[in-house]
Length: 301
Image 1: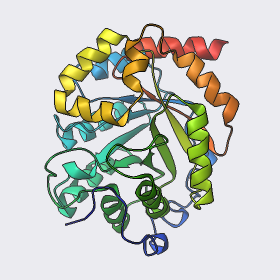
Image 2 (image 1 turned 45 degrees about the horizontal axis):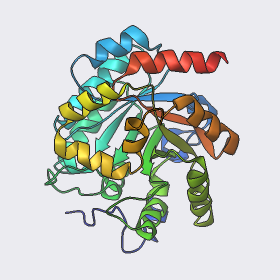
Image 3 (image 1 turned 45 degrees about the vertical axis):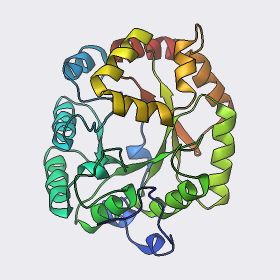
């Protein structure tokens, strides 16, 4: 049984010496090198009914995708949808949620299915499933076992919390990132509406020796009614977990005039440039048509 749902081990020292399957030795190239760099905008989608048709009808294949892992679905649903998108020409990184994976054998089956389907990119998280499905309770334990398989991955993303986590103190979050860094190629942040807060967090990471590039989490062009419907379909418990993590999100979406993705993206662009920040991870909440229309308008200016 892996321990500590905070993803923060008692000591990070041993992890920094463990080879990662995302490393140059495993892939034959430096992690995150130009031939595998993602475009400025990538979309996150959830494995719900109709999302494949919505994406393929609205989103060009040069926009990369990530597919979430929902406790109300199975991890196999995430894998199958990711492989289906890849077969249709998209570049895809499925979420592997530690708490939804039973054991090392189950992990091996998932990784084998992904590789057979052409997937070479992952996003590894601890997840919120209660109780956990088996041996894994945090992302670090899962990352270590992924690295132990003789499989090559071009990119492996891990999560970051610029505004903190309601259940985990900041010191443990930072310790966890230090420990997970050798197994990853980049960090994807949770949604943060403050470029200044993200800049402060990023300085703290760099001071602690975390050098991974970052993709900034930003909500897409989402109608409030659609967000409510998605929250209902996800389930009350999972929705509340999400909103607890996104402490300022409720007010931004439900106070009139509170949220504009263009303003937020422009604020981040003023603060950051490569190599610290690769681009934006757009949480579409499956509002892919309106988000794609927004992206095209944004890029035309």
